[in-house]
Length: 407
Image 1: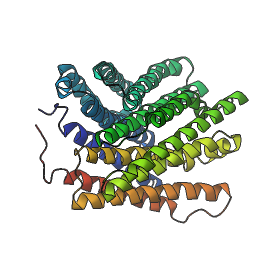
Image 2 (image 1 turned 120 degrees about the horizontal axis):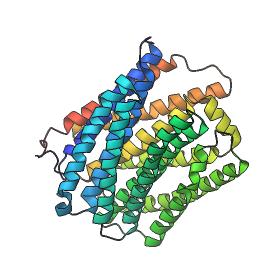
Image 3 (image 1 turned 60 degrees about the vertical axis):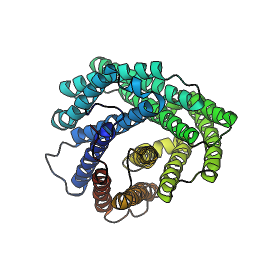
Image 4 (image 1 turned 135 degrees about the vertical axis):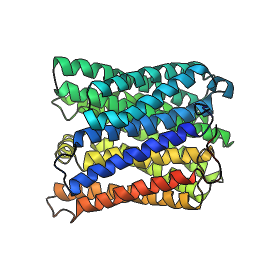
């Protein structure tokens, strides 16, 4: 049965959505390079982002949480199966509704039903997780932050009706993105990573783990201030944002100490080490960028060069950190297998992400310094976007090589 939660279906389905989101990204880049007059840019962009986060990101992360933190017996509960059927259906519907109609009635209905189903799953998971550890605390707070972020999806409809697309409208969107990114994904992914470390039998100081959790958690809510500095806010928000970025930086130092010990005491193969190091470097860069983003000068320049710095930051998180770490996790759990060609796919994926990030930020800095921009910039980004899609397709196909989809 395809709704069996300990099967590969949930992860292959999530990965298929990731590929489609990447295809939408490629189409957007194609339009930048070879403009098409009737191209529905905003609609495709909305589908691209929603499917990447709610399809690939949410489904893969929540599937791993169920597999690692709940018993097989609890996973078989009919409530999970029913809710995941709704999630699959609504996520698939968004692939069609956004490109055709954008953020209109049908898409809003799908998002609302998706949200209600994830609420049920979230509360059920919180009830079913029994163990007590730092990994568990991270996962539970990740779910708390997901629930907090989702409040914005209900509030934004009220704002649109009463005020239109004002500063409050955009700050509500940033509220959603902040607690989804820096709340749910960051906390849940590191909770999963710590659980894998426990399962490997590697002993990490609970004091160090707790320090990482405390600093990270203390920073999460005030760090939202960094997301609203673009609007006309009081100077106190810059102070709060800077303090939150420093707390995140301290938590990063604890994380690096933990990872240093991990790399000394495991036998992971080369590709797993590369994936983990790549994702952690991306996460460290994200934290450093957030420190700089607490200063007015960098806020102003980032807004002026949004297609480069802000888009580069979003892709740094989504591809370099979240996706690379998910590949590591799924391989560690033997859900995804990296054979000969899929290893090539992983290396190509990492190379294309690295090159695309270089293009984004180099072009941004060249324009910031009023120097000549990179020649054929859009064409190069289009090339690497296509290469990214190809790498994902190779990885996906290889998952069927030695083990067929479980029933």
